[in-house]
Amino acid sequence: MQIFKLFLKIFKSHIPTTMIYVTVFFALAIPMSKVGADQTSFKEKSISLCIYDEDNTEASRKLIDYLGKKNRIIEKKYEIKELTDMLYYNQIGYAFVIKKGYSDRLSDTADKNDSDSENSLSEEPFFENYKMHEFYATEMMEQTLNEYISMVRAYTIAGNPLMDAIKKTEATLSNDIEVTYKNFDSVNTVEDFPESISFYFRYLPYIFISIFVNVLCPILLTFRKKDLKHRVACSSATQSSINIQTFFGSSVIVLGIWLLFAVGGVFMMGRMYHGIAWIGLLNSLIFALISAMIALLVTAFEPGESVISMITQIIGLGMCFLCGVFVPQTMLGDGVLAAARFLPAYWYIRATDSLSGSTQYDSGDIWMCLAIEVGFLILLTLATILVTARKPSAPKAKHVL
Image 1 (cartoon, rainbow, N blue to C red):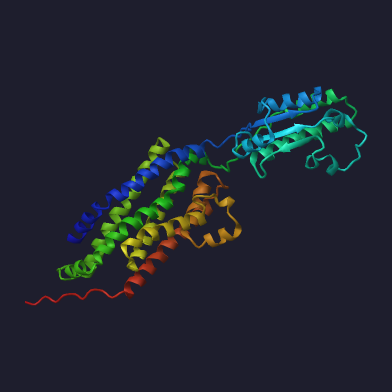
Image 2: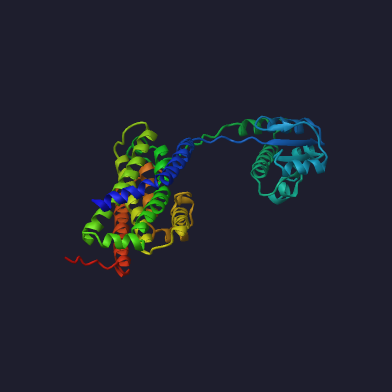
């Protein structure tokens, strides 16, 4: 077992690298999983407003009071240049002038048959605004003003006096709309595989690829160095024994690191895995083996140790961005998803989303994803064997008696 002992001895020198990845992952995974789990409600955001009331009527003051209920009104009046600077530096979200004659135009029903384009805010019949284009606060405030003006106009056209129309508009718009977070859970997926742990499992592909390529590749490349390679060839160990011990050493490292993250998942949930969470754990084990096999395939090409980190980022980041690790698959385009189907991380994330209830739960689809991942594992294994077989090996030394 000398090869196996040497394998673990070399791994000891790479433990700091491994612990850096593990520490950073847990430092980021815990708060990110909590943020993801808390995204079950919606709250309207308030913004800072600067309003100039040139009309100074009861109707214009009512509008200011209405907007002040959900936003912060800045009383101080600024010069135009100062105002645009405040908008640019996001010190205020929106500014507008209630033009003189606002109340009269609002209550005027003579043009009730005019087209919508004539009464829209785009031509600013009621307001003169100062804004940052394509900005959240701009879109929200213009939508709010449009709704308010349109509803008041509708009530006045229906025959209501202006102040009655304003009161009815405020009463209608003050009704809160209940927003619910839809979770496609059909078999208690929330209890067995809560969203907090699904966020934890979601980012495992990147960390597995990063650790295994950065740790296994340098160790295996060390065994391929000319001096050590010939020393091993001169030993009494057969090639099959060397391969078995190398495989055993790699397996110990891979399973040990996977077990570390599996135990971390228990602490994240606060209890032992239960129900379909075991499927999620099996899914992570399969992908850990895939990541290890990617490391072996990279090693088979014998890259320089200086480029291993670059290879890791290309494979890890490229696969994770394409397959929905960092960006949900529901937000990716059809072309991207079509290409991602040829990568194992796509099927890992698809199974994880189904388990967590982010997409419709389908046990058949989940097991299909796991089976496809196993297929990728077999394919990578065959590719590694093929590439390794084409590489010239060190000649076996002959023992002379």
